[in-house]
Structure formats: structure tokens, C-alpha cells
Amino acid sequence: MDNGTFSEGVRPGGLTSSTEIRILLCYLLDHIGTPVSREQIEESLLGESLVNYFAMADSLAQLCSQGLLSCEDSMYTITDEGRTVGRTLAADVPRTIRDAAVRGVIRAQQYAAKAAAHRSEVIKSDDGKSRHVRCSIGDDAGTLLLLELYMPDELSAEAVRDKFIQSGDEVYKLVLASLTGNRELAQKALAGIEETSDD
Image 1 (cartoon, one colour):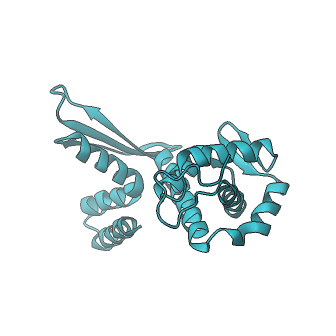
Image 2: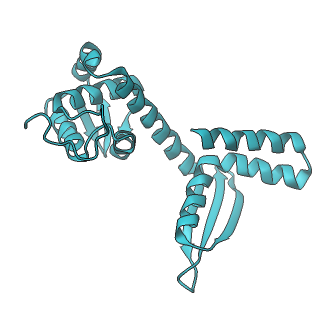
Image 3: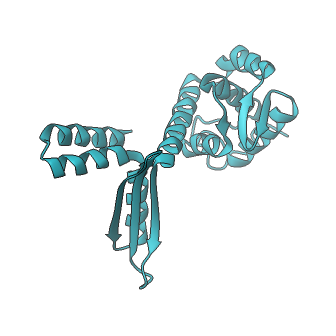
């Protein structure tokens, strides 16, 4: 496959060379150090417009067939040979691209971990126009918080769903602070929500 074949959706300075993309993937999986799902790779690289989807998919397939990556249940891990490639050739990929990719995967992994504890779903109302967002936080002991909110449209409902997954812990603290009159806890929770908004 020729370098530069897949460039649609790639930001200026992003990667269009299949060789650079393969190096970036090896570097990324070596740097993260834990198995990474295909969804998390897509979310980080495509979300940052670092690579084209087809180029990324082709590069993942090539790396697996070359034995540089292994894939089981859509979770990718790096092999010793892939680790060597990632470390030896990392400088061939701009540092800004490498750093953006690592940050993107870390964000995707954090979101996935929070989504496991902070459940949130959009439920259509009978009128078909409005939506309810059902949010809950649970652990091994059961449900800690269950909250259902009315939203006038799908767009705002999806925004609330995503924000709850990101900031569910702080929402829980705010509810507790309101019910117990604990101002200090409320201030800490609001500071935590502001931090996630800045990310």
C-alpha cells in the first residue's frame, strides 16, 4: 500500500504514512503498558484526527500479521518485537503526535472505567420528542445513587449522559453535600467537575 493513500480526516501535521502509523501504534501500546481495546485506539487516534480510519485499521492488521501486536477479544497487546520497534523508531514520529495519542488512550481508558461504575442511559419518552436520562452509580454492595432527569431533546440528553459518566463521583458528592449541608464537600465536588470540564 502506498504511503499517503489514506489522508481523509487527518489534521495538518497528522500521520498519512503507513510506516509512521505502525510505529505510532507500537509506541502507543508499549507506552500504555496494558491491553488497549480497538475502540480506545480509535477514540484516541481518530478523535484527535491523528490518522485516517482505514489507514489505522490496515496498520493494526499488518502489525498483528507481522507478530508485532497480538489481538484477543478486540484487546491489543504489544509483543517483544513490537516493543523493540516502538522504542527504536519512536523518534520517526513527531513528539506532539506521540503525546496526543497517549493522552487520548488514557482518556479513553479512564472513560471506560468510569462508565463501568457510572451507568447512564437515554430513554425516549412516550411523546417521542423528549428524553429521560437515567443515571446510577453502583458497586459490589449495590446501587449507591439512582437519578432520572427529564431533558427536552436528544442532544441535551446525550450531553447529560456523557457528562454523568465523566463526573458521576462529583455529582454523588454534590447530592450528599446538599442533603447533609456540607459546604466543604460541595466545593470539592464543584472543583472536580470544573477539572473534568477543562480536559
